[in-house]
Image 1 (cartoon, protein in one colour):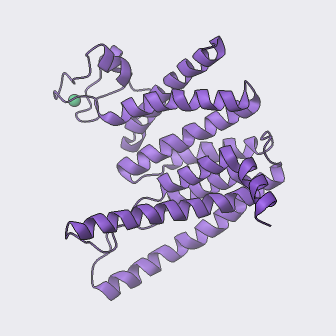
Image 2 (cartoon, helix red, strand yellow; image 1 turned 90 degrees about the vertical axis):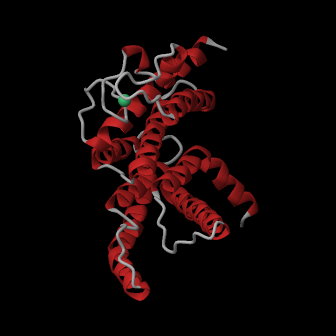
Image 3 (cartoon, rainbow, N blue to C red; image 1 turned 135 degrees about the vertical axis):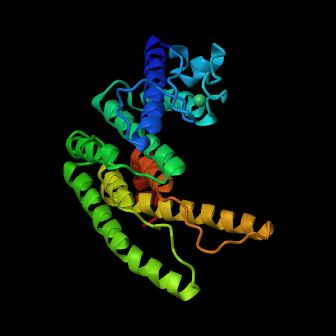
Length: 269
Ligand SMILES: [Zn+2]
């Protein structure tokens, strides 16, 4: 392993610790500057357990307050982020593009975690992310600034329309089925995340990203219905968070957009 790879892997691990910290404190509206706390009882963690991986290696993973271990997610994020960063380094080399794609990946990981755990895509994350992506549109070497901004505009228009339609459609469905609809199927956070995905994938990539989103969300939704039916616990209209699927579609196209496009131009037309 070269020195550069080791350096970027360590950097990725450090960023993974920061992502976990942000995912723990931001949904509870605490300041980022607080020390890492136990997600169960909010008691400050031992300094060696600020990192979940170090916590497990040093056997400090049991909370002194509530006796519960550090959960699985921080361990996974701390291991997956350096792996991802090394992959990005091998693809882009040390460059502005590497910084940009790494930063975008951090946003996508953080949003995926908070949406899965809290059904939240927070403005405190998305507003700075959108500003960074707007500036990044002029630095991205995979597309022109015009393509990036148009991609963001298309995604914004599509998802804002879906957001406006979501509450009347939800009311209609709850009237037809006679059930109160307590869950919001589509929040404004989804609109901001889609706009971000549009900015980082551009035109025409954003179309592929949205198709991947719809397909992957549909597959998972079908899987959930199948499991519910097999267990005789079918509950119609169980909503699933869209954020992780948007992040996945956006991530795939952000990385492989140029290959997907050249493949399509060669075989698809
Ligand atoms: Zn605890």
